[in-house]
Image (cartoon, rainbow over all chains, first blue to last red):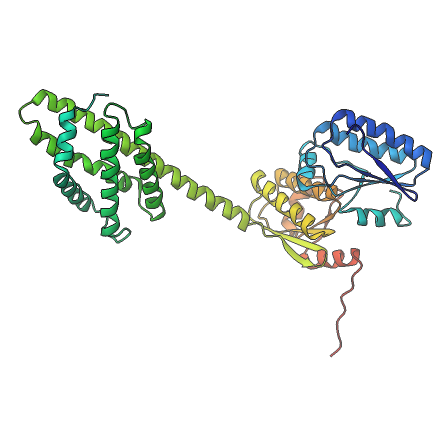
Length: 120
Length: 286
């Protein structure tokens, strides 16, 4: 698998990361996502990382970068389904992903995006 | 290591009954079964089994040491014996005595058998002694290992016990922390709390620090880490039970608890949690 699929649902984009992220994959995702946001004019991006159980500092920073990029392009990003081990690793790495919104699962993430005051 | 001669082996095999009788007597003198921690029957069984394996190993490889394959079964038997004694509360010397008390019984038989050859007697005594010493040491080693396992298990159990995560309400978890927070405990606390958040899908976790005696910079840092991890997962954290002294310490130390919601007690924290999840508790009349 050389790229991560980006699904469009109305004015939301759904990115589900199902495989172990490697650096090239993360960079491709970054490019694909920004392009897709521009083309579709999406208002919100949902990144589901519930299947991701290993992260390193690079991937951690990528997640943070992707949400910053999306925010600049006027789309709210919600990171959903982070595993405990991943959360602990990110905290230990000193990445607190400030400014990134989080939710426990996709359903709650959607609700968060549909709220009128969704912009952070 | 000096090798055991065929004559010695024959002596040992030939005088089996006397040696065993002497050994059991030695064991009794040493008080191996004085307080019913182990029955006489069990002890006899162990003696018989040891002797059987000992003879087997002796005849299989005369010149090989107790570390070789031939002695493997005997070593395993000793390990089981040590583990069992550790569980029954024997101390290390009592456990080692089981092997060492065989020495005297063997020596007496050798002395009788080698009465005509003083020089060889010394040699053979040395060989037997070395052999039994190694077996005894192995027993002590195994004993210590099983004791350490017991201690480690208890430590882990204590860690688990000291960090219960309770479900307070639908979507609200609480973690009453008791005792000093160190890195290892925080790690366990964090892991079990985060796992429970995933399992129950709770949106709010309340960390109650009423039972934490002191808060210093390190503890504050641990708390911050936990709160950040909870936020990353997509849930919210509230810290409750901040006592006046602790509040003063935190301010005096200049700790930055910004971005963390703190409440004076658990009730306030629960009220806030209910409000955030959009639930109302009302009092019924009458």
